[in-house]
Length: 376
Image (cartoon, rainbow, N blue to C red; front, side, top):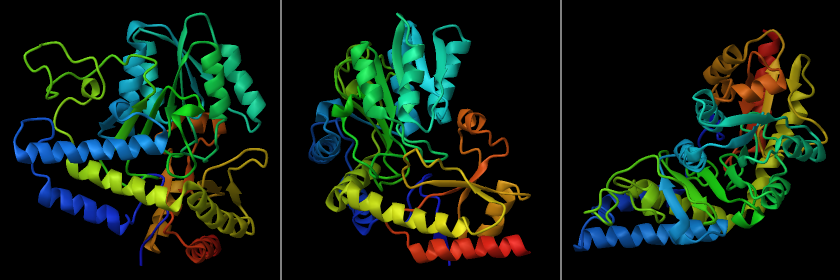
C-alpha cells in the first residue's frame, strides 16, 4: 500500500479523464501545432486553442493571453525577468518558493534591479502594511505566492492586488498551491498569474501556465520558432507566441485541459472543503502526540497543507520511516529557503498535502504510524 500525501509537489493519482486525454493526444494529435497547414498540424492547433479557451475561462483570462509553459517555475521566470528587464525595484514576500526568490535574487545580485522582502504575518493587516512600507517611486513589480508551499498560509492577495493597482505596480502571482483548491481570478487584481498544471489542476507533470491581463508587456527571455513571422529574426511581441517558442507539450496540455474541466466540474469549494477536512483530521490526531509541533497560527488562513516537526527526529529521517510504512510526505526545505528562515525552522519540516482523492481514514492511520514511531 502506498498513500500519497505529497500532493503539493504533484497530485497523484490523476483523474481517469486526465489519463484518457493524454493517451488520446498521443494517439490522435500527431501534428506539430502551429507548424504547417496540413491536416495533422491543423488538428493539433485546434486542440491547443480549445485548451486555451478552457484554461482562460477558468481563471477569467483571454485565450490569447494564456501561455502554456513547462511548469510554474518557467512561467515565473518569464514573468519576473520579462517585467524587470529594464531595471527598477521589486518586492517579494518572505514565504517565497525559490522559483520567485532565485530569479529575483539573481537580478538583484547582478545589479540589474533592487529587491526588498516583505515579512508575512498571521494578521493580514500587518502583512499588507509590510508590503506598503516597502513601496518606492521606482517599484515596478510585486511578486508573491498566493499560498505558502511550506505551511499553506494564504496571503491577502486581493488586498495586495489593490495595493499594486493604486500604485501602478505590476502584480505577479505564484498560484502553484492555490489554483484548483481555492478560486483565483485575474480580476482579483492580478496582472500576471503563474501556476502549475500538474498540482491542483491535475494535469501531467511538465505543464504550467502564465496568464496575463494584458496590462504589462513581458519581454521574452527565450527566442525561437513560434510558427508565425518566420522570416523575421525578431521575436514576435504578441501573446501567446511571444512566450511559446518551440514545440508545445500537446499530451500534457490536453491533460491540463481535462484536469481543469475535472476541477471546474467539482468546484473549488468542494475540493477545498474535502481536503481541509482531511487536514483537520490529521491535525487533531497530531495534537494528541507529545513532541509534535504543527506550524499553524489560529489567526491565519490556510490552503490544505500541514507542515510539522517532531522533537528529536530530523524531518528527512521521519519521512523515510513513514515511506517505509507506505506514506509519501515531503521533508526538508521544500525549495523555499526564505520561508524557513522566516519561520525559524532551520532543520526544515515534514509536509502533509492531501488531494481530492485522499481519505480521512488514511490521515488518521498516518498519525497512528507517527505515534508508533515516537514509541520506538
